[in-house]
Amino acid sequence: MHKLVVISGDGIGREVVPVAVEVLEKLLPNLKTVKAEAGWDCFQRHGAAVPEATLQALRDCGAGLFGAVSSPSQRVNGYRSAILQMRQALQLDVNLRPVRSWPVVSAKQGVDLIILRENCEGLYSGREHLEADGVAIAERVITRDACKALALRTLEVAKARNARRITLVHKANILPLTCGLFRDTCLEVLEGEGWAAQLDERLVDLAALQLVQQPEAFDLIVTTNLFGDILSDLACHWSGGLALAPSLNWGQGIALAEPVHGSAPDITGSGRANPLAAILSLALLLRYRWLDEDNAKRLEQAVESFLQQEGRADFGVDTTRVVREGVLAAL
Image: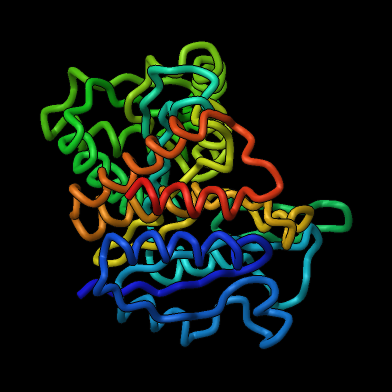
């Protein structure tokens, strides 16, 4: 039996997650769901953005879906982003972000790439301090173990999709110690497993330019936490924007599916929230955590069929309902 921890989170997370779960239940009639809490609203109610009960539920089930998180732009004592806490506490050390062309909604056809990024370290390690009045310091943490874990996950994905190209993205010319360690560790692992012929490198600024110019030239992009966060949001333009941007936070024996979009307070409750990113995130959970390629493809094909039949990129004021009904019908 498949078990899924359902964490709606904040804002439109409470609107898109139930739709995604309903779609998954159609594929997996015996799915068992466990509701849990996390996010800014949870922090305001309980004083903890991620209660220990939520972490334990994820450990017990080994799989989860997280909807969206709101985070204040200024420092709030005791609060840290819920998704960052879950990534680090559960050692979800790899983030997987596919970008592909879809019918109607994509600005360009022929794009099919995956961005794999380290998910717990870098400038998101949480190591910040005030050194003096008007001087704030953030520490960029890169470890060999985390880079090796990322490279090993890259091997899994590269073998599964028979990757034609693996591009390491870094800034080792400016950050020779941190980016240098990332680059050298990934090269050692990937070359050692016979992938030297498929490997190339890009400095992050050039990679950003080329993702705009010729995204179809990329296959797998492997990079550090902050660089991957930015590049994947840039690249998702080619798949139709954040509304169709899924991701998977991937650890050992545990994974947390997460649509990339935020809590979108400006449209919360309006019916305009698009659940496709949440639905597609569950396809990643099926493929990479539950190793159920057949149902992952069925889910993605249902989304493709829905988009083709709908024939429009904007689903109007009833987006949530239109997408729900359309994808369920396509299944």
